Image (cartoon, rainbow over all chains, first blue to last red; front, side, top):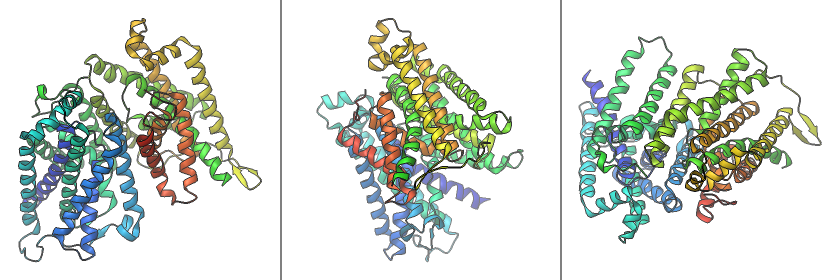
Length: 297
Length: 284
């Protein structure tokens, strides 16, 4: 039982980190990234590919995080000067293309077979159940990300990106380079997603393209919107609630007269519906502040 | 090469049909409807239900499906989009709601009809050989239906009061309101017509290949690329955009692995955004 709780906690924390990246982009800056999973995939695959070719873990992770951030910048360049929907469309496209590359470039990614056999941090030195140790690692990453983001939010930089979310004309009339701030936010958010990708690879011990399907992006969206867009603590809370929901529904699934694929579909229908209802009636989520979230024109 | 061009025109006319509706709704309601692809899939599945499960004639099944899909969207307009306009919600909220709706519809399809590929009960007909080229009767039918639908839309836009009102709303919503146009009713018609075209597109796609729950998702990228290429809000631009994307995707298979078809639409979209974000025919 305790092993199960640790494993649920692990995945919830990894998704909390993943979603903190989205919260920075959407919750704080107002950028619609519908391809967040691409950066998770880039983080995981870069770490694993480099490590399997003999690069030690820490440099592999650093390259993974940097590459995810760089891809964020490349997607921002053609879109962030235009209206906000273009980023959404381009990121969706990007995440599909990343997945196509993972599936088809077998020389690099082994395609649908996936990759395994890579090392995990200090795996040779940990004698207890490795997941306990990994829990400490991911928890440390979460805490570092959380405090870094909290500091950023309260810094002048954070005030500028929030003002861009509220009304970017005001920000630019005050002489702020809105485009540059948006790119920075996208780069940092994508880099955080890249980090969560590395951690996901350590947790899974085996990654394949099926781990990076588009729905993962929308798990992050429901986490951020439910917890409260713009609120980092809300994002962590949202991740925990989502994984309690997943493991809870897994327990009752056996009692319902439906197939596993129907159960999976029902779960995502529920998430879609929750997203609609939250955006219509409680856009500030659980911990967000309504007066801070200006979703009107 | 000619074969690839024929396939491209066929695929392009399906993309165009879907892109027209997306572009019109985008122009008039001012938001990108990410559920558009999944509404295409819904149209394709409803036709499947009438055709295969209720064993109706294929054309009757299609007609019922197109009407029903449109009605469902008018219902969504009442339940979701109109209340959100009343709250003067920004388009970012609408975009997120549309993705929620997309997830809901796609998984409802999986829940009701399963994740497997389905096909319509249509007789397999021989292809027609023209020299070394093969064009199937289905492909010919798809082109005819697509062109007829586009002419019908052209007639509605140019010759009817509602079409004129749609164009007015797409140009300038405040001016349209001031001249006494009933905005809500025009928006209802826009949904009905735009989604009817999407449903036709979904059915045609199903006729050409097969029906599966992810078909809408895989169409999202090409139809957005087509709408952006043609200029958002411009139905005629969407037609051209659809054709260009369809042709580009099929022609690319001559040099690239077919798996990367989708990437071609994506690259074109990025290029358009960088060079001419208002699209070739201009948009809003």
